[in-house]
Image (tube, rainbow, N blue to C red; front, side, top):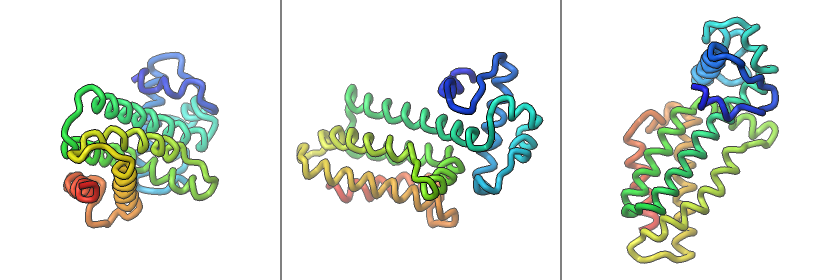
Length: 211
């Protein structure tokens, strides 16, 4: 549990708990926020509701976070850590033991959907923040990843790598991200983020475009 929260050390508005009990309480608060944000917007969720869902007092909340803004940024920071770790692992795997292009794309589609589903509420709230203040650290990270991934996937293509192919891979990845974004915003879409069939369909569309 402690390892999961080390990313918040030095985070503005967050006080690092001194004991293991405090770490458990912090994790309960963060888990409660993730669940509540699946159901409602950040604006609709109050600190009192977060504490009630976590089963802790508001005093426990304020001993760790300055307010809801710093609390939400902590949720974003933790989501970014898992995303950055997953991206680095995927790139390293493609470098060390490259699979076929088809296998690599299917893994990309599956892992991308699972991450989006696990962080659904935080991502949806982040979209609102992007519109209001223009801040989106997830988008910045994804842009660099798209470039790094395109080079590696192009090497797996039967026709051989080329700049044109890398460009098409970037667009295919953008379409994949757009599909996840649509499912994130439209909960009643044909394929929800929880639907494993979405993995297959995204991979199929990706491979069809770059073939």
